[in-house]
Image (cartoon, rainbow, N blue to C red; front, side, top):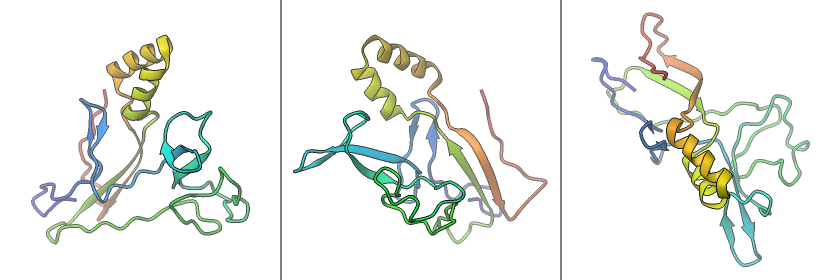
Length: 163
């Protein structure tokens, strides 16, 4: 969000291109599935997809044609999010500073997070090490999927850098 002078007064979900880490903040919303292993006493989050037997979080936006009944199966239903029949979008409210006069919202998609690559690097043998080295070079930066501005200012667009 920007004030009348064009200064940024609010940001959520800043991505550090040097480290490949998304800055955590209380307002940040990441659409993702988090899986884990339930041993009957505790549930532990892990990237061991073959061993996982529990969904801890799955707030990914459902596809067009979604129905609650049609997705009411383990592994299909949202966990930690609620979507109505036919809903294939999400809306999120942010508390902006009083001096905010414009907002630029950018939806990003990232193929692989640093945490996932670190897991594969540490447990994937030579292939994991190779993948980790490739990730170190490029960092799997998020790709822009969509941009929305309010108010809609056709003469203004934020500077976006691509490598």
